[in-house]
Image (cartoon, rainbow, N blue to C red):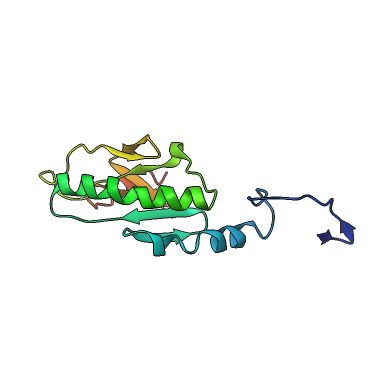
Length: 139
């Protein structure tokens, strides 16, 4: 690569994009672009953020369904040499008080943390779908 008439050193990369390189975000997006086709989750991709959503009337059925469907995600990740940052991975159960309860969700034998609110593209979304958490954290 050239920048200001200076040639950079040649580096061979086998399965990742060097962090901070100019084409990194677009190459990453191309790399994960087929993820939605291998899962039954509703999948939202933006840059290096991936959000999976799923709905079900019963909490117990939802827990079973999520854990079952995460196996296809894990298989895709292994095949595509993608890893999850479990420090940044969590889930929110949306609904009123009677619909929310504690769930045990696992991915790659790691427990996914249940949280009351999560940031999505800079907006803090809480389990009750109110603006309270977001507004409290603006300043």
